[in-house]
Length: 177
Image (tube, rainbow, N blue to C red; front, side, top):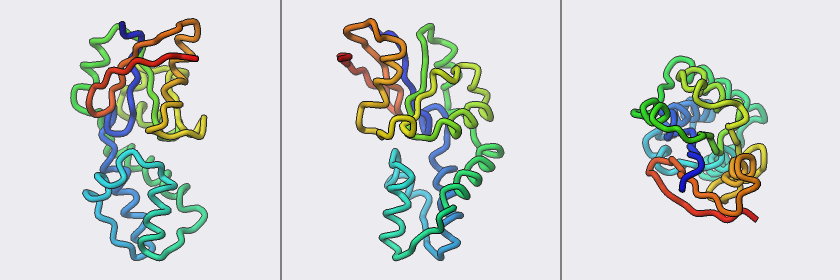
């Protein structure tokens, strides 16, 4: 039996993969780095931002400024305000479910909440149902991010079935210790 639905954020709830990578392209242009948005979406999908930056630095023999991430996040926020949309069928999916829903994402919580707001999805998720890898310093594919909602909603349960919405619908069985 499914007890809750756990959604990823980027590329699952919101159509953000190209927006995020376009912002990186704009940022890396300052360093005369050619950054192909289409290739990078495939290459870096699901990667931690720090890892993407480290790989681009290494591949291009550059070192970005200390405020690079802050500038990037501000640019992403501006792009979200103008371009971010929910993924197709997300609203129908959210409206059709009677199960509790939450988000478990590698994105910062502030970015997730902003994205939910500008796409009109914030009414489907309360802030306590948004879990970020930055809060626990653990990134996918490590499963720790998925334990957070399970512990919050199912701490009395020995076994929890959950449904993860991440591009494809996957069912998993987890035992809480």
